[in-house]
Length: 164
Image 1 (tube, rainbow, N blue to C red):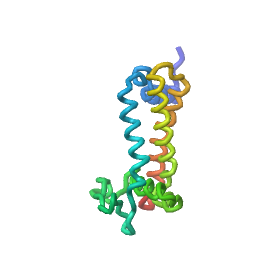
Image 2: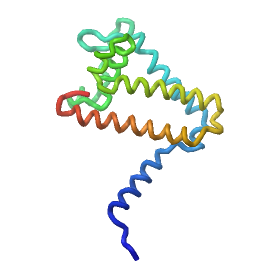
Image 3: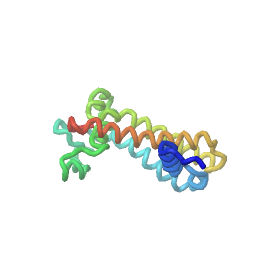
Image 4: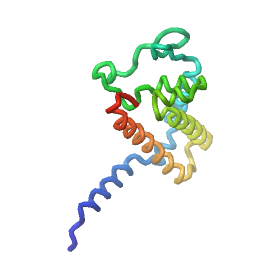
């Protein structure tokens, strides 16, 4: 009997790990999940238009400065993978694309991801969670995992330089 190679063992483990994140039919049929994600996406896409970034880089809503929301930066003095995304979204909403990308390299990509998510959730709600093409479910999984991987990779790249 042939012994499995370590390479095949790692590949099989990775396939199982990624497979556990795949969107399943039961998940798609739960319309409440789509409503929650749609609401969150719409908040993330519209709220930045009501916010501003002060010269001190603090975010304000209707002139009221919001508290810093990153415990990693406050407690550990190290940015997390999402540090700067709120400010990046706000600057993006006000048409300051270069400033947005300077605060977080993935700000624009994340905004497009939320826009895609809103469209995907509306589509699933319109179909009542039924008959969603398998390719779309697989694409949804790949895009979601890809965004998580991009955030983590971007974070590792930015760590030596103190930012995203």
